[in-house]
Length: 351
Ligand SMILES: *Cc1c(COP(=O)(O)O)cnc(C)c1O
View 1 (cartoon, rainbow, N blue to C red):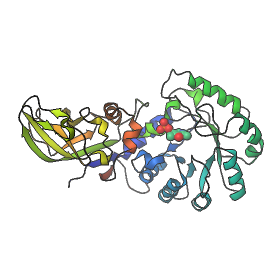
View 2 (spheres, rainbow, N blue to C red):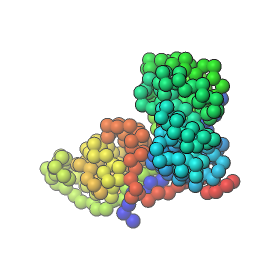
View 3 (tube, rainbow, N blue to C red):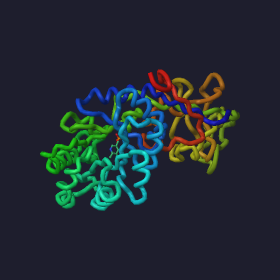
View 4 (cartoon, rainbow, N blue to C red):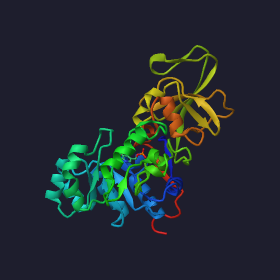
């Protein structure tokens, strides 16, 4: 088999949810948008439901429908882009709860699904989604009378603990919501780590569940092993790959591995990342191409059958740093060609 092998540790995801949940005394939801940050929303949701998670967030209604099939009727599934034109049937058929973020959405929702649950999102300074002060002042009373499941906002800089935007948004959220009886939520992973002031009634971690920063204490979740397709020896001075971007400065043993930018292995990692044979790093040399990468294995004693791109030695954040991006992008870019295996689950369904 020539595709890479992606192993997803559901036990580690469950442990990360429990660790984050233990930081708070409020409800801990789980964000599983973008197919569970690339790791499989249905499997992740089912594993977390077993741990006691009851609220799941997806980005769009279509994702929610898939998660509903995996979870059955028990859980609440909330849609962060709210109630878009054309969503009504999906929201109703799969019992999805839209988080409404504008007066247009609120009007649409109350007209098309008047008795259907909903939440509200306020903007406290990020300027991405959510009602601003003026609109909130107009609709707060009638909207709250219909008993939303949550009033939330989202933080722009919570991954930087000392950023002044954090207390600023906290203050704005208080000003916009103090005195209401609806449950409130402000924190994603970063906000959870800022302390209890930020927790309110519910936290919404995503990246921390999947082993990514800023949750330093996270257990790694994804392991990616790439098979070696061919091995060759180069003399000093020979060049490797498109654009001749790497040249051997010594006699070099070179392995060609099956994975490339079509699998989400970012081209910006060319000549910067490492592949690992156990605890020994082997430099990725030359350009990442569509389906292949080339790796300097000169210093290994034995020829490997495969090398690891993600492992405890090189986490998603290590790889992200090498490629000039963030762990979120590495995870959500993991390619469709990898053979996926789920590990670390006591049993697949039930018990
Ligand atoms: C993505 C997202 C989250 C989760 O954020 P993480 O940084 O991955 O924990 C929570 N809330 C909203 C509104 C989001 O868009």
